[in-house]
Length: 113
Image (tube, rainbow, N blue to C red; front, side, top):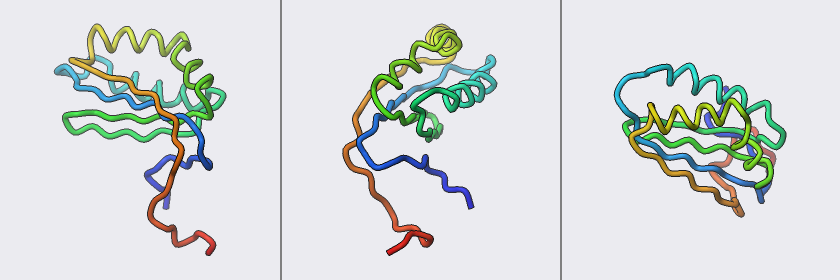
């Protein structure tokens, strides 16, 4: 069974938290979101992503360090998606960048211990 959580390494690492509210209609959003997920996964320093939308959307991407997260922000296709988001897809959004210093959760059945 695939876990719904990004498989991140031991901290520290960087989390980019993108919180948004959408405008009405798809207008190419779903296809672009899928493309951005794929493109991000190909970037150096990418660790994983978690995303949910139920009115409010929250996407957290995880990166090895701030340089990797900053480099992703500047990828050409991502710049185009960012502009389209501001112009078409998002009523409002916030981006927060944080360093993860602790990471814990439910014990996994397959974990040693």
